Length: 544
Ligand code: GLU
Image: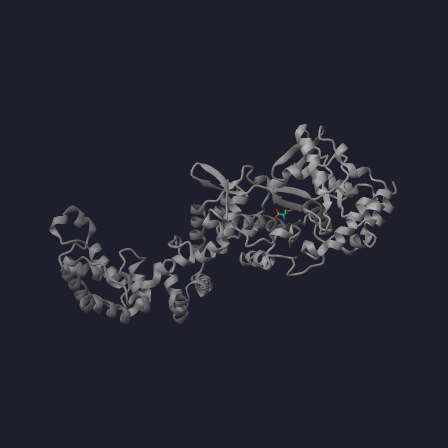
């Protein structure tokens, strides 16, 4: 068989692959720089599982000074969304992923959308035909159905292979006749594999894997000229000079087929890392995290709650490498970008999505930021999700920053919120606009005593310019004057000799000013509220 002739017959207009080999030369990168990619289908917004799956190649690319590519795999035309590319791109950008090449950023190795690479695929298809490793198959759907039934009846391997691969033996004249007839064809790999022999493969995550060799003559190009995943991935990763393919674990069983294709071309193969999905514990079972069943899987859930993007990435880092968390404890002020991730420290059994863990990482992360940084994050979040609050914090920007600074920037900073949506419930009472409608929960039979305490405190003891010690001493004096113990020890020894203790008095003042029984440091709160607000709130209680 003259394969060159066959190739010209099938693809008369396709360019020689030399053209593309020259157009997409070896990248000029540092030694050890990795070229990684995230290659989703544009079927809608990604979820936390995908976000984690794209975090991995982004991190391995950039920690090695390499390149991270977003490639869109849209050859499966059925599931495509019109704005699918933008949705994915924006989600990755929101998490500050650094995308070096993509449909939206462009790049020297594009196009980055597979349906725009049809001409390229045609050239490489032609090349495979010309070296005798691919052939056209004109079998109809009925032929294939019949073959499958036959195989099922005899309990034989299902598929197009060996003696079932009828079109392997078509002569040049047969092919010419079909083409003249206008018959449609798919292009198939001419497999040389033997499933009775072993195929051994080294995966970066899973280690050495043994599978049967491939013997299927899989479809490389469909009758519309579009390649299914396998062929497109080999050509793209070859031309984009990918060095690590990270992809879903479900591709493992196809690896012998993919590798046969790489070998048929004679291309240098990238390394492969097959990734386990993020799982979730659902009662007693462990299952893949699902957009449908798990609200926390949706990225929109994280945005609405205001879960900091950096906290999510710190959490991903703990999922990615088991030794990351220990490192972070030793290096609390460093970014995950300073850590050297490796594949051998990845879990071989998959990881569980643990919201509690994310919350604790997030609290920790927010507690370490400067108040002005928290303000900026809260500002961006509330602009989208709580516009009234956004206006308020911007009206009193300096004041809000000071409020956010209460018990911050100290050795053990407060950790009272994990999400931006939890900040308002913690600080609302610092704003008159929100305090106006607040209700007190004082017990009715205590109201007179409470009024008494507040009245005396406000007239005799409260002084805006007192330092903390004087302020507290005055609360003690007030306690004594009203028959409350100023000394906790004395009170505990003899509780019946007092109406209560200084703690009760402080609490009455705290509730009068905030309505809450627990708050951060009351002195700091009063210092920020200032005299006018404080007297106004005291009056509100006295007039109750
Ligand atoms: N489009 C494939 C997927 O979404 C990509 C697999 C790969 O990264 O090679 O599963």
